[in-house]
Length: 341
Image 1 (cartoon, rainbow, N blue to C red):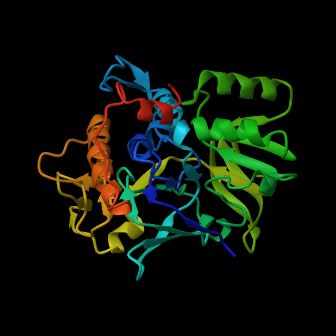
Image 2 (cartoon, rainbow, N blue to C red; image 1 turned 180 degrees about the vertical axis):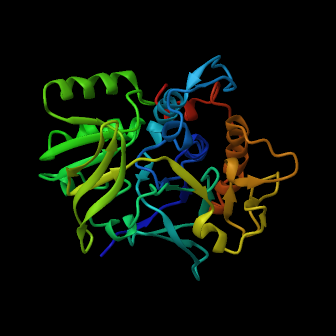
């Protein structure tokens, strides 16, 4: 049986805005669990441009997407949020007791009084490479993320891509896989230099294989992968593999959220500007996924929205609890929560 998790708040999306929402809610002693389809925190910042400089975060003249994510994780550490990665929210139901029940594609159930949608442009879904018949191998030989490293132990793993995810999993799976082959269309990568250098060192030692080219076909039967055809500078040849991990980037779709009965505006969730609540009481939307007149798709705008959302959410979770607004600079009780007093 999949676990049932009861909490105060479920946050859908673990990007920068979702992470900062944990901080604002944590100041009111509200417990948060975050669900994200990716395998790590940071959303677009870590998946699409981890090393790309961001110049409009207050007090940071320049900070990378990865650094911003790390700082936010450090900031919310005192509140011990629950993280659930590699999951897509597939269902939402309003219960008789007023709470919401959220279901994931792993069969888990979460019950909370408040739902916060902070899913950026929607759910991130992996791009399927243009390989004929790849659908037949998905879930058996072809995977778009690594949920359990043990599933790759002793396998001949083919990894396709040149970004951080491709390089990270090349390094992480090398110790457990029978073999690891990394394929990229060119010798230049979009990954951290340290990861590239480590991969090249493993290649020099004969511990991993690196090939330049593109995968054009897959071989196998009944979803069991046996090999792939590589089209490289010297023509086509077959590579033996039993597992394939293609990292071709992500597409953004609203996904199952579109079926929740929320008012939408051109595939975005309409909210008010007092609480950033949706048309369904108790469900809030912050960050790039929401819409209101004058909306700016900026991280700092999402931070502001998270702060106002938290004011409304704590009244729903604890309607009878009187809370006096305090500043972290002067409140000893807030500083104690943050571990700085």
